[in-house]
Length: 233
Ligand SMILES: O=C(O)[C@H](O)[C@@H](O)[C@H](O)[C@H](O)COP(=O)(O)O
Image (tube, rainbow, N blue to C red; front, side):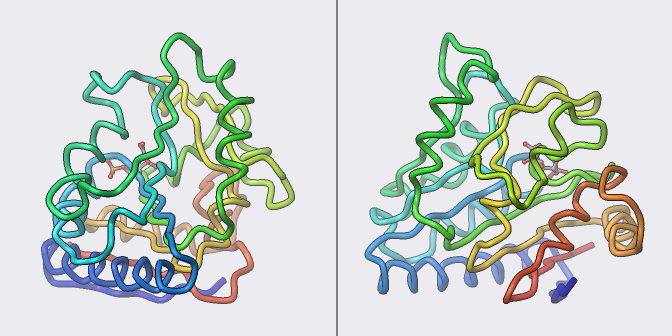
């Protein structure tokens, strides 16, 4: 397992640096492929990062933004990751980017999986950039301890792009990109903040079952490049 730590004195300094790094990788993807895919997490941590990223000067019209995972709620819900991205990332210069959300009105997460798997399975591989978060229970994406499809979600040989998952700590049912779609990203960052998450990360880096702390599956995934861990107090 290789990680590279990037520690910053403040969350704002972290957001500025990480936004700059993401923008550079996306610009490289656009230059070489003509377009780029950025996969982002929801939750509370990425808001400041999104604000910084939105003002970076790249050709956002060539960027497709996808969600690492989504809570199965409409965009009118304040739990919607798609709404978080629309409100905080798809603005300023980044308003030209295209968001490909997961939520489909009228279907539950399980019913939507077939259509979503097809759609997201057809996306270019690998993604240019994947930004992960982490919960204090050791989940990342929607790979939750006790998740009903956790084994399939973190199976590196699973050919499916997305999976529906429910877990005691997850709130509503969720849709998540699978580990196999996330782990081969050209630039893969774990964005965590606060002392508590630092301690959780240290525990995750120790030996122990992935089922207890599913972020381990990502930290242990074989990669050419290290996972870039961005942390601020
Ligand atoms: O939709 C989600 O909940 C996420 O994508 C999830 O994996 C998130 O990254 C972590 O739960 C951290 O969340 P916080 O940033 O709120 O601590």
